[in-house]
Length: 115
Length: 112
Image (cartoon, rainbow over all chains, first blue to last red; front, side, top):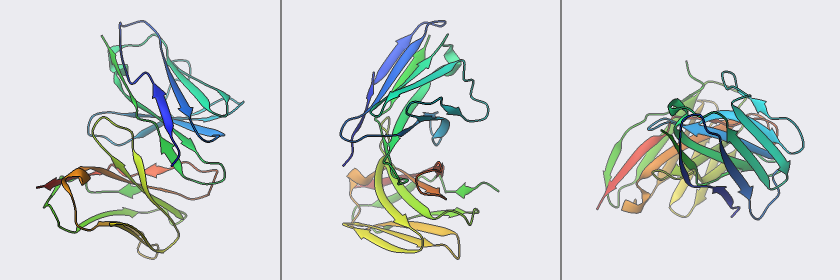
């Protein structure tokens, strides 16, 4: 099956710093990638949709200047949490969609803790 | 009414039991239905993908879709302790262009 990787798997940072999370599709090309956030015992909350070569589309209530998304190639999307604060601590998961289908394959997630 | 409703559980069953997990939805435009399994602190793993109404079987897993009732199910036969996880249903309307709408997930606990 299709494999999506994320790096890092967990990160601890100080308040006010920026953190970059990478999402890669390892064995297929993904024209569309998604970024989700998941709080404990809650379902996935879509943050943004990222299309290769174009600007990301953010869901309502998600600050685009705080969560910077770059999708520079068909296999890589990055999420940068700028000026992170403790309330940004969460589990961030990316997914990549197989072209012309609705099948999304998820990465293993990145646990962010902001002190 | 939320677009996708799913009982959060937990659902506790003994090893070997048949498990039934369900979701209801309100948007009649949904045509593509998926079930994901998520272990604690891991990303969701795609289990089943179905289009429109009908059944689909894969090993111990069977997915059913009843569009007339706006109801989907996932059955797990001969459940194992390793099946203990959260199961998320997801659905979408237009292939390739629409985002997925997820249920909140049902936590399943299979005891040995």
